[in-house]
Length: 288
Image (cartoon, rainbow, N blue to C red; front, top):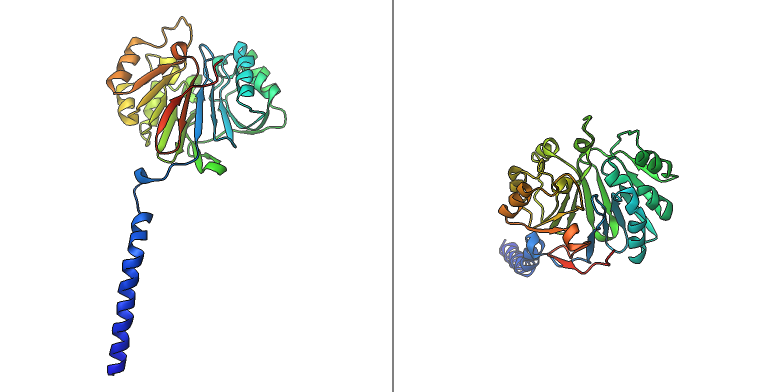
């Protein structure tokens, strides 16, 4: 009996020693996200396409082009991507069917190999729509739903769909809204999502560091309630000369009141944001 008790004490001592040895590593494993190590760089380019949208995301291996600007900007977007060394694109997301978003896409589809195309599922009787759909070729075409996600495997990043076709007769309300999370840095790409669409987004976790402002800064989007949910540090407006009053003074005031910095493609030209998953910075882009 005495021998068994002695062996028990020895085993207990070994177990306690092991815990003291392992515990520091357990602390490392449960570190909060804010202490994570930097990841390889991920860059998001907000291209200056005048009154329209075109955004290119890349980790150096996988890529996504989100919209292509108006038809007259297609060659400009193509040339920009070529200067970046792009020859194929994993995903082309056409967030909705207005010509200032999809007009330049026929040029891109003709100039680059596109693996997968994401569309909102709307059918339009417009020249931009017809030319773009005719250029789809053998690319896979997906109409995503809310909750779908698309991975960039080499950088452990994920792009999620937060809003999709709602069946509205108003094209803007059917916009695809995409959300990129890379490490702890988050981007919200709000397409032309106006008030009704944004109300649906407010029911989700949309906290983000960088916000692509909806509908070129329209007064009918980017409400104070919406901004309180997003809490952006940086708001980027893709806008050019227009007769709509974009961006509206009311929207600019709401964004500034939220504490966010504002950059605009009509004033800052193309804008490039680079992140390592821990922090982000504005870098000099290849200019148009």
